[in-house]
Image (cartoon, rainbow, N blue to C red; front, side):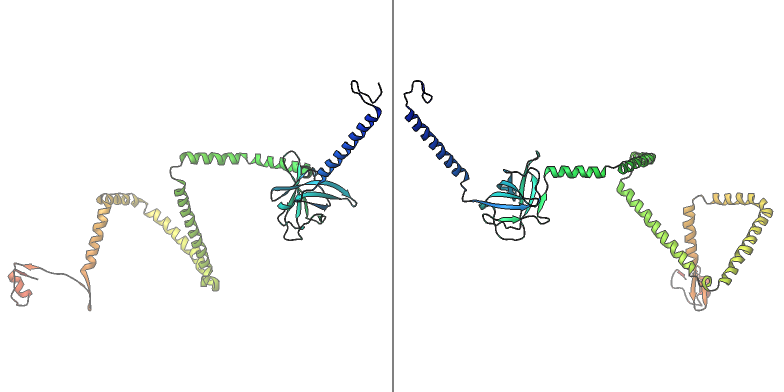
Amino acid sequence: MPAYGMPGVPTSRRGALVVGAVVIVALIVVAFVWRGVATRRDGSEMRIQLHTSAIGDGVVPGAGVRLNGVQVGKITKVDSVPGGTQLLTLALNRSQLFGLGDDFRVDYAPANLFGISELILRRGPGGTPLHDGSTVDLTAAGRVTDSTMGNLLRSLAATSQNVLTPQLTDALNRTSTDIEAFAPLIEAMVGVSRAVADTQQYPSSFLIQQYGSFFNGVAVFGHGFVKLVNEIYHIDVLRNDRAHFDTGVSLVVDDLFPKISALGRTAEEYLNGYTDGLSVLLGQLARMVPDSARTQADLRDLLDRLDRTFQSTPDGPRVGLDVVVKGMPGLAVPLLGGATPTGEGSR
């Protein structure tokens, strides 16, 4: 059987060549059709290029592109250009750009917690509207922000390496030692707070009000004390006649106080025997007034009556006294100057 033959199938060399040529042509046509379909661009698609000086971890072809939280396209190609920069090709949905200008900023951000990144477009204040084939230069400072998970981990590692130093460890140890030294004081404060909470009988608002009144009194007392010191400092004789003031102080300290002390010692020597009898007398006087409140009221009433007895006249104070004569005609006639009483009695 020839090499081009198949068991049970009648064929010839010419027929096999024809069939092979037809199959090859069909494969070539299918390949061209598939490439045309794959590379055919939708009318709503727009391709732009971003020229950047840095690229984030996980930003690869196929990564999504978001605008206002909505995915508007994807990255189709990432190329490296001379000078250490990169050129990103984006395929964007033209209908979802909503007048996006070429002044936008770019953030490389994580799309999820597994390190997959995406590109986020941040609108700018103005700029020229984008068109198909636009190239946006993002090499200026502040146009690109790398917030990918890899960059965050590198920043955290660098921060930890710079912060966790032997000096910080020593500072933490000293802080721990200082806090341990204050532990008895803290325990005492906690104990006092617990005792106050267990024995408190009045609400906190009332206690705070009372404490406020106390501190208000302290403030008034302090103001009065300072004012007293100021008044003493501004005494005229103290400021302008210091010799006279010193003489008065010497008189009181050197003469008056010693005389009073001598008087007290003399009284103690000669009147010591009378103190027992004086105490008995005062005790008896105290027992004579069992109800001090009533006695005080009676004494006040008596003094008021005596005060009303005296009247002020042009000739000086005079006792106001009315004599009532009732049923005594023998005395009424001379007292009334010969006038006849008109009633049972006269005044």
